[in-house]
Length: 389
Image (cartoon, rainbow, N blue to C red):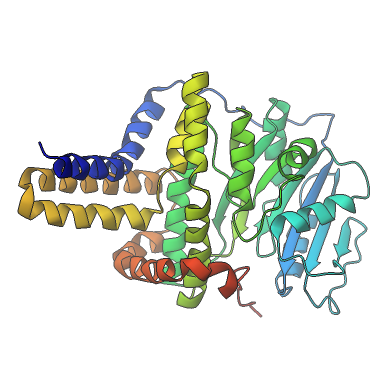
């Protein structure tokens, strides 16, 4: 076999295993005993002291609704810190003493800088902080659900980011993507003894862990969650997945929003996917299932990239290696089944299922995002959503 043929096979294996890995993980998940998940939430005499950090950049229209939901949380021991970076706060007026409105003197344009600005201005020594986006709405039991995992000894917990809006095809497809990731990169990974991937908001950490991981790092652009999860996994600590700790997230509803957002995300993947090699190597050295599985997941390209690569390779093989083309077809069918399984394992709105017919259009705009990925952080710093009056 020639060197070119060997290279062709290797590159296809490196892409193709991403199509079948989800169903393999799912099968292990189905046969593993239900461990690592707390039972029913029961009242305790002790409450953690939470700092809820809400970061806003330029846009404040949605903040009143966010704060309203946070003030309805069924919990006593928390304060809300709003970091309004480069925002006009003239019309913001929160009368509740639990809300601390902070406006940095200089533009930060950074999630981590905003978080540490809030930490620097803590009114008391909170032992746990949780990060909420300025377009999120929070379930009233959010903190109680997080508590269950901190009481089990976890220092980092990722909740669910459910769809707040399904008002367009893009929003529905965005929600479908989130469900897929929550199921395979959250619930299944955690149950198999690894860690849930972080999602940027709806996540909580002991304050000491957060500071230890990021205090001495200078992170620019998007992707602080990628750096944070890598720092946690390098210590072989696990990130718990709290399926019932729910924040409702505003999904992208317009093509321009989608392109800007995905450009940043794709840029972030290229910038940080190398963490996967490091964590996988540590896992093999330490014989840590936590690090091994997580490292493999970090090396996976965005969904549209490996799906399009699979279709391209399958088409080429049709002319040079017909048998391999059949294998690509089977692998794609397996992936479709695994995607469907994720949707069926969550209460998925019928509109999301209907939107799947528009996946080619969704992929097209992500290709546009790929072309803009290089300059993603110059195009936009944060996703801008239209307020609903």
